[in-house]
Amino acid sequence: MAAQFGRRLRKGATTTAVAAVAVAALSASGAPDATLITDSGDQQSTGTTPPPDDSAATGNSPYYTDLPPLNTPNKPGTSTNLPVTGSAESGIPASILAAYKKAEQTVADSDAACRLPWQLLAAIGKVESGQARGGRVDANGTTFSPILGPVLDGRGFAMIKDTDNGAYDGDSTHDRAVGPMQFIPSTWATWGQDGNGDGRKDPNNIYDAALAAGRYLCAGSRDLSLAADLDRAVLSYNHSDAYLRTVRSWFDYYNRGTHEIPDGTGAVPPGLGGGTDHGSGSPSPSPSPSGTTKPKPKPEPSPDPTKPGSGGSTGPTPPTTPPAQTLAGVENAGTGTLTATAGDAFAERIKVRARNSLGGPLAKVSVTFTVAGDTDAAFDGGKTAVTLRTAADGTVTAPVLKAGEKAGRFTVRAAATGRALPPVTYTATVTARQADAITRTDDKALTAAPGTEFADTVEVEATYKGALAAGVAVTATMITDAEEPAENDKGPYFKDTDDKPVRTLTELKTGADGTLKLPRIYADDNAGTYKLRLTTEGGATIVIELKVEAPEAPAV
Image 1 (cartoon, rainbow, N blue to C red):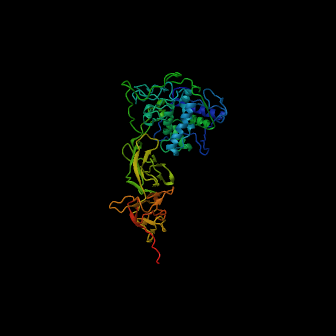
Image 2 (cartoon, rainbow, N blue to C red):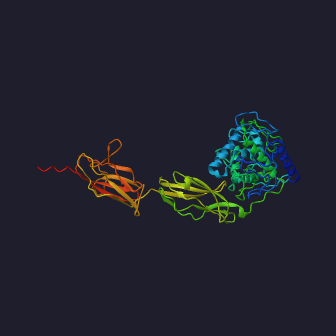
Image 3 (tube, rainbow, N blue to C red):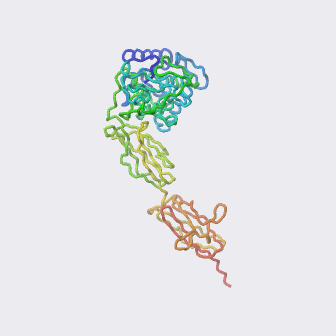
C-alpha cells in the first residue's frame, strides 16, 4: 500500500478514469507507452491485468500517480540537472539507490533465477513513497520519522484490524502500511528482512524494506526478465491495472538512465500522509516493541503473504489464501545417508517435499538447494546453488551431488526460495579414497651397499574390492623390527627437497592406474636387514624388506 499522497485512485469509476488519463498522458508525451517493454527488449506487457498469483490481493490501492518526465534521462554521470515534471525526477537519493542495488545483489546471490532488477525496486519505491520522501533517511538508511499509510478502519479504505499490537505502525486497533516500501504489518511479519546487517528487521529502514520487497517480488519462482512474471510481481503489490502501468512507466524510465543525488534532496510528493519529516531528528523507533506498552507482533496466521499494497484498498479486506494453496514448509522426502568417496558422485539424491497448510503436497514451489561449508563438493556442472520447482506430487529432487577431493563433512540446505520458512538441512560426508589391498608390482630383491643408493625403485599397486584404486593416500615409513614398530632412526632413508634424510613420507598418492612409484632410497653406513612399511587410506598394509650389505670380495 502506498502512503497517502499525490493523486488518489478510488475504487470503481475513479480508478478507471485515472488509468485512462495515465495511459493517454503516456501516449501523448512520448514517455513509456501503454505497451511496455522490459529491459531485455524481447518481452512485452500487454497492458492488461494478468490473473493474480495465489499471493496477490484484490482491490486497488491509492498510490503516487505522477508520471516520469517527458524527456529521456541522460545516462548515469552525464548530468545532475535532469528535467522535472511536477514532483517527478530521475535522480535517486544516494542511500535509496544503494539500498536498491544492494538488494538486487543479495537476491541474485540466493535466487539468481529471479533476475531481479534494481530499477523495479526504484519504480515501486517512487510510486509508494517518493523514494522515502526524497531520501530523508539517516546514515543507516532509516527514515527520520515513520512513513505511515492511512488508518485501515474501513472509512474510505479497507478495514484491516490490528495484527501487530501497534509494534510497527503505532496503532493497536487497526493496521497501517509502514515504511518506504509500504508493507502492512502482517506482511512484514512474514517477509521482513535485515538488509543492512544491524540485527533488526525495520520496515522504516530502506535497506531492510528494499530487500524484503525484492524477495517478495521473486516469490513463486518468478523470472522478472519475463514481462508476464514482472507484471504478476507488480500486481502482487497492488492488483490494479493502473498501478501496473504507473510502476511500469517508471521502471522503463529508470532503465533508460538515472543518477545519484544527495540524501534528502529529492522532491517530496505533496500531501504525503502519515508522519512528518523532522530533518535531522531522531530515527524512527525500533520495530520490535519494548517494555509492556507495545506487545510483540502477533504471528502471521498463514505463511503465505498478504499483499503489501492492500492497506489502502477501497475494496474489501484481501482474502486469505486457501489452506490447500498456502505453503507451510518444506520437508525431507526420504533422503538417505549422504556419503561418497572423494571424486565420486553421491549415490543418494536429495529430495524434498513442499506441503500446504493441510499437510498435503504443493506443486510449483520454488526450492533452492545450496552446498555450504568447507568443501569442494558441488552439483552437476560445478554449481553450489540450484533452484528448481516442485512437481505435482509436491516433491523436487536436487541434481546429482559430486564429491570433490576434500574429505570431511559439509551441509546441503533446501529452502523455499524467498520465503521466511525453516530450511531442510542435510549433512554430507566425503571420505578419502581407499584401498583394501596393496602389493608390489615385481619381486626383485632390494639391496644396496652401505653409503650407496638402492639400484631398484619400489613400485606398488593399490586396489579396492578388486579394482585399481586411483588417488589413494599412502604413507611410507622405515620401521624398526620391534614388536610394536616405530620409525627407525638408522638404515635406509629417503631425501627431502633439501637432500636431508627422512624416513617417513606422507604426501604420496596412487596414480590414475592405481600404482605408486616411491622416490629413490638410500643406505647409510649401517649394514643389516631393514623394513619399509606402506599403509594406505583404508588400512591396507605391506612390509618390504631392504638389505644393506657390503659387496662380496672378489675371489683371489
